[in-house]
Length: 341
Image 1 (cartoon, helix red, strand yellow):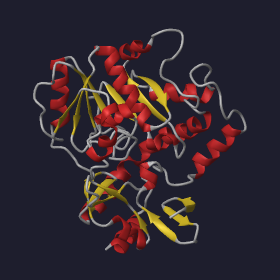
Image 2: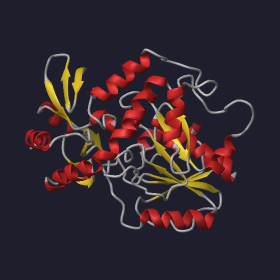
Image 3: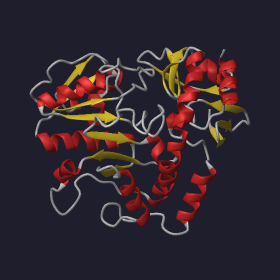
Image 4: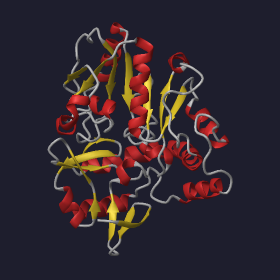
């Protein structure tokens, strides 16, 4: 399937067939595909500045995104992909604590770069590159109290709801207990909110204020590549390693993506209640999860054949994952679920 057009919750392929998109482009299109306000912001920015010099000389719109993300006493370090944000978080933990170990969880998905892959729980992704993976990584069942954190662990990384594993919601109190375990060990808590954040589960951040380091991506750029790691100022100081930034990209803080991000950051708070309400409509049809991060057993390919885009999930692919735009209507949900059957 090759996409030709996408708008709102609908996609048209190159053969002219229309689909209802319950994937939201892997959760990217929080405001819907080709949102007119996002498109207008990108177009207006393109008339002013398309690219600057990343961390060496950022654009004014990039500076504004950093300011907005930093509200609430945080600082933000930008990346391009979600994996970048995870890499920044894990490197920050090493810089702050001096301890290389990572506590991670079965079923986790944090990205495909080597450091993020080491923390990822999908063995078939890790196995071909095992000889190159960093560590040590101490892996525990998701949702269980890991007990005292190993002495060499500088951080624990966790998804507040596991996305790729199939919208797995941990038991109440799990994140709070993990916070306590990190405090006992002098480790940092990294909450990977690349999927769950920016309103996806009905709040800005699913982890509340528990994280030392919080990653965001996917929806942040409104369809363009942009990610960030949020941290307290004292943790950001650990990156003061010399006159140059030792973790950066040519396209870091791209002005077009940042212009889109300002629209996303402004608009998603008004959709928190909608994400919760729409999520209950999925729940009533047997989809587990939280907000508009949902899954149920089923054949994703068969759903595609019926004109509904969902994503295979779970280590064995037995789930269909739904992460539609937060703007999806009740009628669109009902139509999609009726098609899937």
